[in-house]
Image (cartoon, rainbow, N blue to C red; front, side):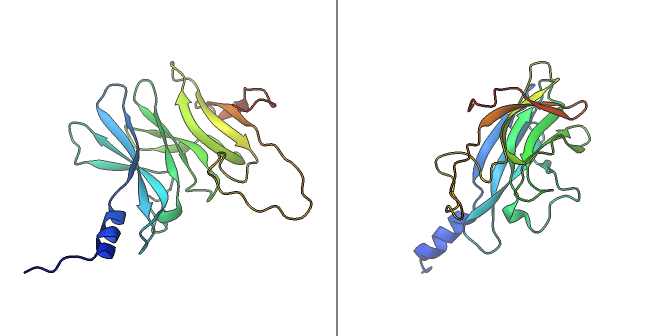
Length: 193
């Protein structure tokens, strides 16, 4: 008789299974990009995310979508790569990554044809949710300038120390021109979007 596995070993095995957090089908329906969690080495919890791309007709040929210049590194467990957005014609994928600047998310675009990646932003703060304009000429993203953490009610907040004051970080709309990497804030400075 085969011994039954322990609850702990079953829980560890389940924790190592991929956890898919996003999926985005290309406009023509020929390709799929998805985001999945990365488990920390030897741990049963996830600290980072990574993006993959595969053709619908050839799902076995999976391509990593990453801002890392030399491909995937061994220290992937803390890299955040997510927020996949297809260009209207399906030739490019916009995504958010902190692979080149740990802890600072930036906007990147990957050309699907040759997998080349370009960094579009160099900002300080939280960047999220890129969306292409219908004509593919611009990308809008949510941006909280100088934010020390991701916005939201569930994000960890550092304890107040030193002189206690109030700083309001407004989440605004950042417009990016992929042709020349120009960025500009388009929503009012005193309006949280």
